[in-house]
Image (cartoon, rainbow, N blue to C red):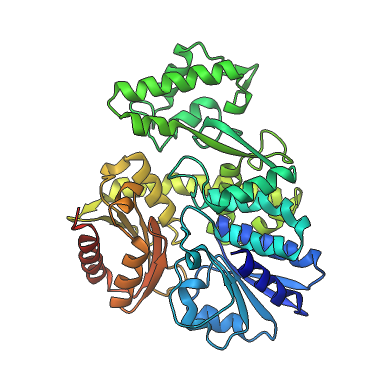
Length: 459
């Protein structure tokens, strides 16, 4: 992969101008920022364009520009569309196609693009090959990896992500330690962090502010400093150890099981150059801020934050973060009202136009992780929403990793089932997406059910 990165870096050095084309999620925004910053430092003029996915329309829009295209966090799943285009790819999705494009992708070397290196990580390898001083961009690569949930399977980052971590630590831009893995360590009041906990959800606490408050006060935890709620980051080490140990005991007492209870703790990643108490300090919260920009059609705000803007772009991104959280709560409530439909090998819901097509996958993942709305963790979740540009039906699929270990590959499911109804799809084994024509939902589900049955039938 270092040789691949050197090859791509060599191509980039010869360019008079580069156009970076990247995805709108946290990993894509980080990848685009890494590419843009590394090109800036090399004195190569560049611009960044965001796309939700590569399809014939988006490819035709970006191809006739006269400059080399650098696809980050996408491209590998659409190789045949790139025939005749002067481009390079840094990606972590499963390659699909016969066109040979200079690429950095973990799948090309037998590594996992879902757990061992993200799109931002692939872009970082090229940035480092361009100039060894670019190791400070490792912080953005880790935010991208965490945003893509690459730490979820083992409760820590693995594979080539460890090398990125080491680079970032040597550069003085990030650090990590074992701590509670729940979201909101820097910014949420402790009881809110427990109220919205998932992976694992806490029986009789997740979903209830009152129960979360009672649990903490029962341990003697001081919840406020004066009038201000304390976040997890503001608790001392003794308080953190007490809460963590009692949470594990609580989970075990409800029969959650040792393996799941251990997931309470894991590695957390701190951006050491960022101010404490802000979303930028914690990789998971930083990634959520970026996702809020991308999912609400403002990925360029996230790009500017990644490039160092802590003024106007950051303030506007924080406003989007509040809107993002509100939209997710409303989306979860909508699915509660609609209900989950269950087939033998999958479960699904159709949000219609009630949830943005860029958010429906996030809602599906949150529901699957928390067990809300009657979701079954033993079945993959497929969610539908109408594409806002009128191009068809957006499909998002999510699964527990235990099913992937039994043979489930949602990337193959999305790719094959979407193609069977005249659409397109792809992604990772644990999370994937697609776009299908209107009126194809029923047939798509039948095809997806058939594929999932064949993947899991030996088990």
